[in-house]
Image (cartoon, each protein chain N blue to C red):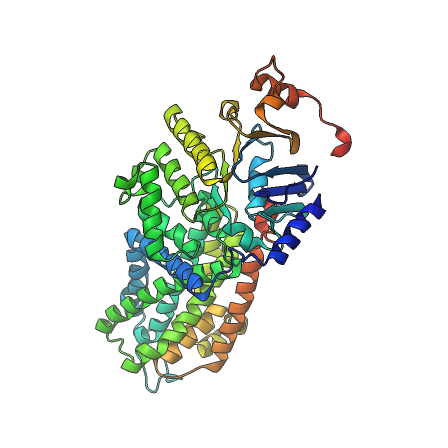
Length: 290
Length: 250
């Protein structure tokens, strides 16, 4: 019987019948824009998500940074060329926070989509799975970048005023860090079976990543107070996302952070593709479709 | 069992297990273009797993599946491009409008927006929901949601349509509408259809019935061939499914 199927394939190959799956770059672009459009519509429909994404870092900026204004002194360290107030120091970390929450929110929506079944619509699309996952990732990143720039605009009124060129220079950093954090979210979503489990992961991923990074305190300070914590923050991908945003926002470049982010992105994306692969992924092994 | 070279769907020697739990045992069948084939089985028979394998949500490790000759493992994108699917569970985004859901599906098949727009109008008109295209999915009834899912599955003009328990939870009128609409499509578009159900009355007008029980195909023939002249389809189904299965094949 299997021979018969092979015969069909050979017959088609001989006849030169064009495959319906032969997608051109234009088809890929249509698919990508459709996925981004859907993500944007969902974001606009969920006003609570939009507002909380902005309120969260602003609360940190207005309350936390004001409270620690005179407690935590930040000495001159690159990329800053002068002494800076604490709120200026934590602003890049808060932008990172927006992207971190957004990355996790996207993966939460993947778990929701999978539980609700709409993930199947995406997975049966005749495009390669790596492309569909990347498109989903880019859609989330686009949303997080809009949020980051709205935050920058509001933060300007709190005297967080990086050079104007920095607002443009930071864009590649936002794209790279958004992709890396989104890819981490994809990996997590492929391992999580139910929405209920996701809350735990949020606590075990978001808060440890945020607090063991350079978002709230400089690495050199951490090195002075706790060497193990310093090394943990050095391997924490979020530290490098924050540092790249910080440097590029002030027209500098931190090649080490950029390289480490690229490496983490490749790692997380590879794991996500495996996680969503029907042959090797956990989704297939788990079963329970019936 | 020989397969026709032109089969819309060919499944050969397909077995599948979750760990040590075997779900499908050496499944073989074919669906021809224009066939209205019913996959009949009780809950837990393996219908949804079979659909997940055909649609590549799971990978077929033992056996082969071909959609219009495209092997789903070796040429999955070509196979998926021929497929339209209505899943058992609703897969519409309830916070988006009917039209937004359909545009999203069209984009997932690489359809340019102007083509998608005319196809959406055509399909919504066919199912009588054109005037509701700007309404959110959450405002529709269960039957209307199912119709939208059917319109969505047909948007990219597939040659093979898979429907997994599409009438579950629907009233009689919606069930009849869906059934008749799909049967008409089979006749007018030569669409190959595999309709999974556990409701025997949906199988009476089928071109053929594939009876799946405990992961095994027990019958693959026309309703007339499955039921003896003196028995109903229900009795024939009971007779088939109550016969003890051979343990050696486990």
